[in-house]
Length: 291
Image 1 (cartoon, one colour):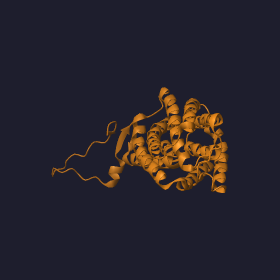
Image 2 (tube, rainbow, N blue to C red):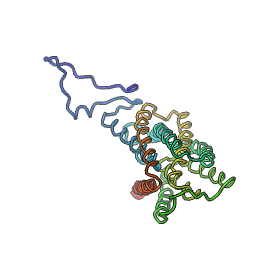
Image 3 (cartoon, one colour):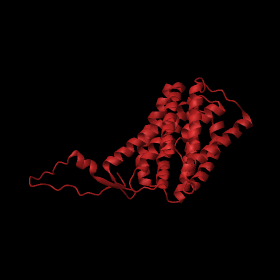
Image 4 (spheres, rainbow, N blue to C red):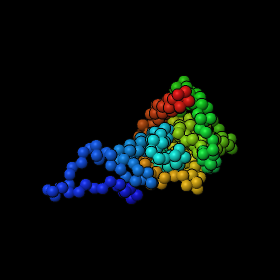
């Protein structure tokens, strides 16, 4: 694979002319260089597994960053801003594929996703510019409370999101979409994990979409938030491109499968996955805040 260079010398042939057989442990400990980082093959495999899982989860209901970003943060030698930027490289690859898959199969209208995407891109760029300046510990308690409220609302109102019943039309509809895009875009650029889930619940609870169409709309907006943040991170030289492309390849596969699964199973399935992902987000943030 281009960009990957094995650091350890290949074993030389023995007296019999055959190369010695390497044990599983030796293979796992072999290292490669990706974006200047020395990674074991086991680490590369785990990163690709995280990318695939994140792509699937993100395509169904958002929140793939819950899996992918923590995996990148565990890479030896990577900084938090590099991990966040590299997460955007992989994320935009998978989100673009899932957005295209949803658009072909669900055919969502763009009266909501279009305005949201425009302000979300600007908000994400602004959030990314502040990512290295503001401590995330300031925001985590607020996000935790918001997620608990979102989860409680979704569980308490099981009929919400079964079908699309828009609350507004015309200018008011576009104004709400613009505001939601700006706020959630800024969050994605600043922190990231859970943005897709926030987009889905905003489109369901505030705008009035069913879960399936909300997820389709959210993917289009999420492409814009990833792009806005990635542009700023690129200007700062933060993304580790080869690592991002490696994880992104696995993310694409997961995203394609996840979007097809969501379309085939419908809003009820998306709602169940949404509740599970929100619960996982709450658990993770609770450990960070209370631990």
